[in-house]
Length: 195
Image (cartoon, rainbow, N blue to C red; front, side):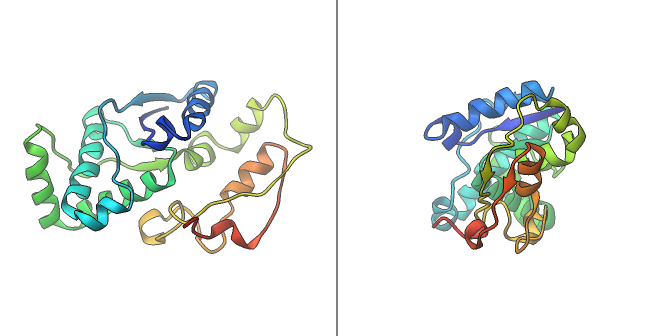
C-alpha cells in the first residue's frame, strides 16, 4: 500500500510527534509513505477567506503533485483533509474553475485531472488496513485506559465533501480505541469545533 504523504505544516512543527508516530505506524503496517517534497501549506482557513484563487491553486498544486506520482494522498491533519478535499471536489465538479486553476498550474508544468483521492490516516487505518490486521499488530493492548475521542469539525463536516461517516454520530475513533483494547468515553463535546 502506497500513498503520497502530505503531513501539512503543524505535524512538521508544533505537533511534530504526530508526524513521527505516523511514520512509525505506517512502517509497522507496511504502508509506504512517499513524501510530497516541496508541497506547500494548505492555507488553513485564513487564505481561503482572503484569497480564494490562491487557496485553490495551492491545494490544486498538491493534488497535481500526487497525481503525477499516481498516488492518492494521505493526510494526518484534519484541516488539510478538509481543504484538499474541498478543492478536489470543486475541481472535479466545476469545469470553469478547473480550467482557470489548471492555467495557473501550467506555469509550473503541472496539471490536475481529478484522479486523486484524499484520505485521512484514520480512514486508511480503518478502511484500507482493516480491523483484523490492526488487531494482529497490537503487541501491548491499552486495556487499562479509558480514552475520550475528539473529532473536531474538519474531519467530519461538511458531509458532502468528506463523507466518511455521519458527522452527528461518528464512530471511527471509538472503533479504533476499541481495536487498541481501550474503552471509549462518550461526551457531548467530541464533535464540537475547537474554535
